[in-house]
Length: 100
Image (cartoon, rainbow, N blue to C red; front, side, top):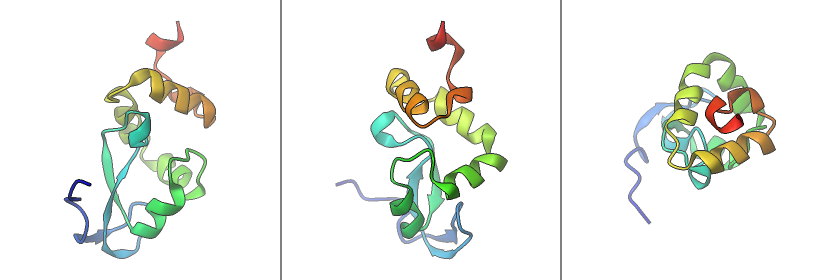
């Protein structure tokens, strides 16, 4: 397992605001091609898993739509990301290129 460069770094969780040791959280789940990361506490990271429907994630998305759109654009696997977006009800973020 790779060493987490964020683990143990003290910062504020992007989801709950807790200040303490952070973990890396892939905005688009890594298993669906995600590369862009934010800082989240271990609890929020674990609770969200790879869900696009998690209430904490959806609240974060309301004010960070630009970061999320960047994460979708920069996916390592656009097809898998598109599948995830569809399955999670996030159709409005799908890339137009894949929808034609």
